Image (cartoon, one colour):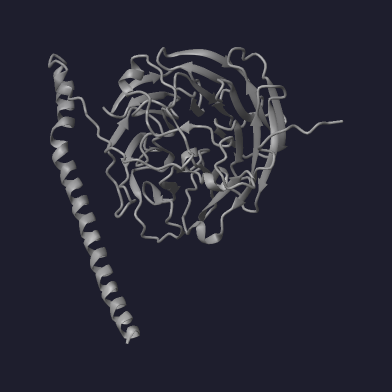
Length: 472
């Protein structure tokens, strides 16, 4: 007799929210690039959109559901399409974007969302020579951002100073499909078009593990770190079947297990929850989300269920644990992009009790970084600082994100004159133009707030009149 494996996640079910809880009338980007096009955190949902003459993305406060007006402000500083966006894990108002214009930009979103369009990032990170398709923040150190471009390079930035600190070149002979940090951010793993997955120590700048032909098929792969240091990959077999494989980084010769799924050519984007060890696979262009539980006994990967819907997904956002509703036993929430809208999908474990279910919500990574950027670059590691979700997550005040540019002139003036004159240029005349633009933006924001207040005042007066008539 086959005993059914015990698991509290066997009955997890997915449910799309009601129509009025969706974000409607959004022109989702049509760029052919396999990123998620959507990033969410406990405050905002950000979505890459179609933009004429440049690149833009929307940032909506989570509660701003319903139809989004055509004139709604966007983040629109890039001169080419935006390919990837990622919220900073340590500040819910900071988001980074990578673009076809070869730059990475970091933005500070106002506390309550955008009132006017934003075209001035806090910092522009320049260093890639081709389009930048991947960006991902360091999980535990403040202000460290990784970007990977179609120049097959990975650059790790100190965003606080605007400097490229580590440049990993010559490690990838072809396009990099994805990059993922491990839990404490001491290693990264990458999937590349040459069919290899690599484990890299970024500070030593060396490859510490490599598996050629992790998946035989020619279509794009993905590789992510799990909690225990193993790596989970998605890819294609020689027969174009979609596969899910698990690897032990200590021995990459053979996979621990391989699951064949179906024949479909959509790239499988994996989303992983380290607290429950559940991985969700969202195929680009699929209309379903499959999910699996990973355990430490063979066969290691256990299929749980499939959430199926009618409409194919263009992209997918994945809410961090601290943004979930623990009172409803919600263990994951996705933001599914259609052609013209974004639809939240809630994954729930059915429980009879209304009490806090501590087995579903072990302490989870909170918003405080374990290390400062400098400490990490000097060689320190720090595990995520965990928080309890027992009373739900209450966001603290985010500190203003500032960039302290190192003044190029402080580096001994012995550099050749051409250098100092160019660095000179960048560090002097620019601020006046920049600060004028900033001032203009602030004034514009004040004007629009004034307009809003006066229109609300008018409305109040009208309502008061109507009330007084009713009172008679």
